[in-house]
Image (cartoon, rainbow, N blue to C red; front, side):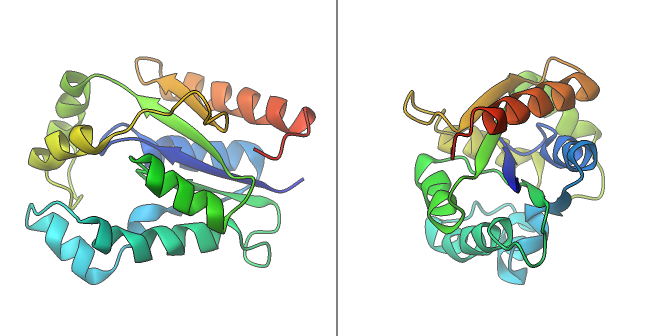
Length: 175
């Protein structure tokens, strides 16, 4: 069965690292959602300007298209994508029915410390507050979203995500 999963959360939570290792563990393709942003979006973020929803919609459509594309990713794909708001997740769900989400959740202090250590990324640490402000934690009816604490080490997070995704597939759930 093909798997489409979004590893989500605020900048600096470990989305790319966990999604890449999750993809490897499950034999899926990996896509860093940051690579699907337009040049304009990247320039805005690099300049410290938060994106608007109008900036995000085409990007989220590209994320959804890649998640739903069995020709490019026959076994499935793991995408690192912030997906901070429910409306963003709903947009991805509309494009990629059956997608699952793994929210990497942690304190602002921990993530700030991680961002201070990060080099070579266009997302400045001073936009973290806007990311937390935008974050809409999954509602009870979002049964396709699993939350994992980033207090755990990356291998433990990947293993937990693998277990959750395999359980969902064994149950035959489409979400």
